[in-house]
Image 1 (tube, helix red, strand yellow):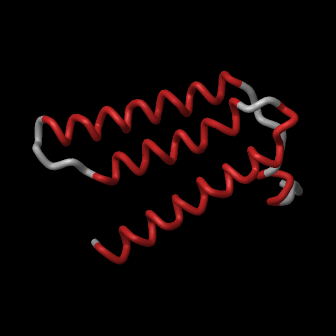
Image 2 (cartoon, helix red, strand yellow; image 1 turned 90 degrees about the vertical axis):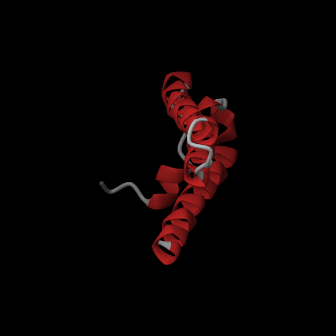
Length: 93
């Protein structure tokens, strides 16, 4: 637990196996978005945002190890989007 936030965010990517797990979660959320759009005739934007969020989590894990900085920036963007979605949902609902 002594690992700093900077070391955790800008760590070396963990590889394609973890990235593919996050991609599969993204596919599930994109599928839920399509389902809510097609069958219920009301697309839920939250499913789409969660799908994009999981793609942003997956991409840094799929990058080569020399792209640690880019992976860190993408992880930071994913966290910022997650916080904004939580704030938006707490204000609107």
